[in-house]
Image 1 (cartoon, rainbow, N blue to C red):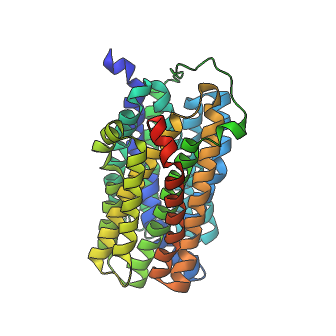
Image 2 (image 1 turned 90 degrees about the vertical axis):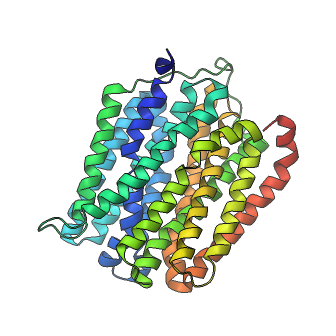
Length: 395
């Protein structure tokens, strides 16, 4: 009975173990391949930025399709987009085409817009009081993806007569195929179980002026933007500019992605005990520490420490923000609110990713870190303004 009640969580967590590998593979290799194919070094991180643009641009279409066709159809469409993007990326490297590689990155980003809806599918399939813990369990898939994705990218990077890194994206295609098959065979659409199921949707202005929703969106948006900014710049800064080996760069990126998801072992319980607001505050402190440690001319240990704190901060802001969001809308509003939330969050993430290459080329590593400061100031201001209202509401 327990397995039946949590079947959606189990199936989607397993599918995400393979599906989420697309992001760390492109994060690790996007800037490196970009540096080899791009006409100038300041365009090296453009493929990663375009991936995020692809994500942001597909958020509203993804939620619209799922509202009409169901989540299963949406997840399958997303997987097919990613599979096509992975194969196109391999082909573009073989043809030495920077433009085609950017198109492939855009398609992978489109897939991620569908993939990010998994958290809402899980939240809708379990009792409300189990949402934080269920979301934390879902994020365990990121631990598997953090290890599996970069490892496949590294081990398949040089295969036989294939050009360097073609095998990495063929490996991505294989992993995405596994995710597609799991969703196709085992996932079934599930209805939301919220008590307000029959209540009418409220006007948009009323929904998006709630302090909980404002903080939820800004926390997730700042977390994603700062994470994308620093993470996008790191492989290029380490491997291309500072001449660290691919193994060292992979180690830092793997540690970062593990730090993004390992806190899920306890962050769901922490939200239950202390509330989402406290977890968001802890995420803010972690990102501030990330900037402090990474400032200056970092050595390997500074890159590593900064990226680990970056991952922890993102986890707390993402999980805390998502929990706040799911508590603040009615069932009839869910697709509308989820679509707007993801559009704003990933739109700001796209700005962070687009800025990484320009800041790195024009101002160096400290330019990247400095860009994070006004974003953190925005989050701090929002937390202060909404603190009392959220405490009163029990968040």
